[in-house]
Image (cartoon, one colour):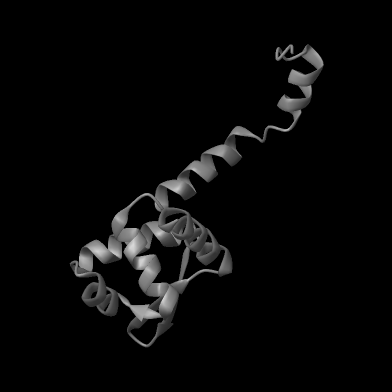
Length: 110
């Protein structure tokens, strides 16, 4: 069996590749999931909306460390914030974030 790719096959495969910017954005998304602290934040926010102070208590980190992580997650639209007076409450941005998290978790727990 000849497994060598023909020029036509290579061309078709190359046509299916996305723009470099899409791959960069995808890599950045996976980078956000590659940090244990952020994964703890995802786990906590998958259960309910929380303030920075709530997350600090649940995750067991300083307020500044939690705020830094939330800032990174907000920039990629992975979490959203709602302000009520002087308080800010964080939640997962949408169901896609939870689906990615749950699928990865299911895979790890297999």
